[in-house]
Length: 206
Image 1 (tube, one colour):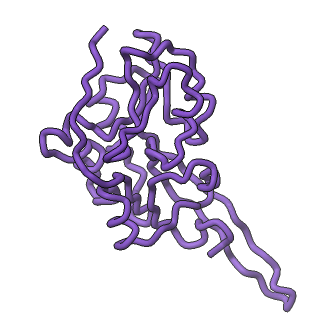
Image 2 (spheres, rainbow, N blue to C red):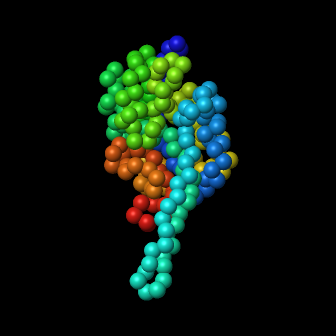
Image 3 (cartoon, rainbow, N blue to C red):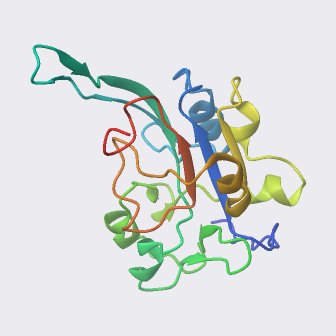
């Protein structure tokens, strides 16, 4: 079993993702690149691309209808949350949040594979590595970040729909929307995630 490598923090601010779902074509290049980079077997995916659809036609009461139908693709991985419940429920502190850059990682020197983190996470980020019997997840490609490169999902997206950086900077540039149709309420864990949704996909029909 490989020893856990504790790469030096790459930022003095909390890192996060920006997902522009209005640009995402659903090609899954990010998902495939992540699987390839992390050598993931069938069924284990650190980044997942979902198709989200819903809404309908609402009567206006004046013989007309209002159309709020939506359908879009959404790329999601670990959101390196402000209040990650996976770390709270980990009995060995293997699942931990780095204090400087806020990346949530699994220390495989401590992980016993109990699965409490997976049961806790509303986003389905922690996943069992059946070969080692331990949990695994997106770690923001800390090895690439340490080498001055981008996370593989960011570098691979052909439409530039995924960006990363200090979450304060991303929110200043793109807003603070993290609640969209198809995702759990952000109040559960306060994800470090900004999303530009398709029209009608923001919760509340905004």
